[in-house]
Image: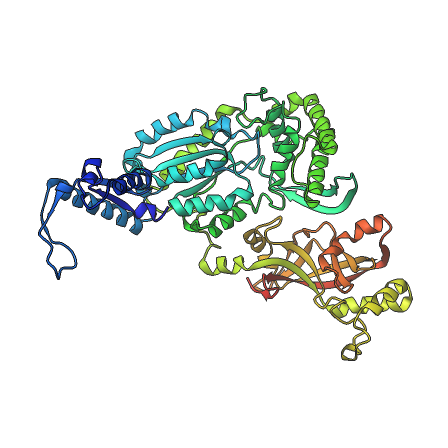
Length: 610
């Protein structure tokens, strides 16, 4: 597309009568040249095309030693062509030199969400109303921007190709505001980045507001065979109320009226919506935009041309603190557990012949209909959401007038150095001295309370090696860098939020109380309680007690041993294995307190200072 925008096609002497004048061509060759022009060159995508008759240029007789003939005279058509090419070249050069000039940039509006979240209702009639408002503000904005709304379900698989083409094309020099009435879950984000790169369009994301954009954490997974596995933990950026209301809206669609056929007549409509919700798995409300930006950048979109997200009201203020009916909440959780189990087993397709899926579908529908009135009462009015969307779109377009768009306004912590450091963060840990951990192990080893564990672990470790003879609990089986993982960047918290929450704590000592020792044939860990506060020495020498954020992991622990070939993160499963009788637990009574140090770690597993 970047090549197309720089391509000017001049057809010289291509009329049928002119082609026939070439006496050097046989009749068959003339027909082939004519067909080649009509089928190929005439339809070739380009910035602009010009037709020039043979009579527009006259040549002097070519000299034997000349590389090309000399032009003797030109007509008005030729002079007009040169002026048009110069003007187009100047326009293109200005656009290249001023990439943030709103007169040369389209805007791609898109909706990360799920079916039933209301995007089609929001943008209905918007093409006309928004076009009128933008045209009336053309003088203030600096250009008369076109508006185009396209529905994904009506166009089908070629939707994003159509979007790319429309954003690339220029009509009378007017940039396009393209509103994509289509669900755009994470798998489609690289395509959006490619479109913005090719068309130089500015991406503008529309999200539900914070009433619906809330992290939901689900514990457990249900396999296709019905087996429940409690040790899985997965999270999503949208609330269960958002899911419930979206499901209800899909079921209320009249049969045959939805272009994508996702209505109450589809046997597994609810489970398809649940699947869309699950496309956002392992994205939190806090990290959704950060991950979206990263995907767009990776595919060619420029970070400096990302507009501030639009947030549309979703839930009524009076309903935001109300709980969903208990049976509905449990059933929504169960549906997400089932979807997680199917995805884990690579059974991605939602089949109307799958009895497990159909059973869940039936239960969901019955429960949703039972609580239909309460669910429908959750959402704000359509007029309120439309007015908010319309006003925010106008605001974002107006923001392009004087300065280049930006995703976030600079603040105290947005300097280049800070941002570069933050980008490196992988996790925050509470590092516990290995010698303290080993002293505790040694105490319980001697007491005999952990006899079974050591009889299992020591023969599998490097304890018999001459190189580690002086270390009773040698690495790599016994963990060298003993720590509590407090939080991962990109999971529940973005790297920036992680830095903000723990920045004042880095290097600080925090108390850790060891409550029990859990072990299986492959893993061993100390269950711990991290102190909710710690004392910090301020610059003036005074002492201040500051809060310590909760550990992100539901099982706060220090992994101390892994069997050869075992992955350390699987020690998270130990509590579930204890419950099922596949692991052992020894209480530490009284609790033993150790001190740990808060540290940031980068992607290369090296400690860093923020």
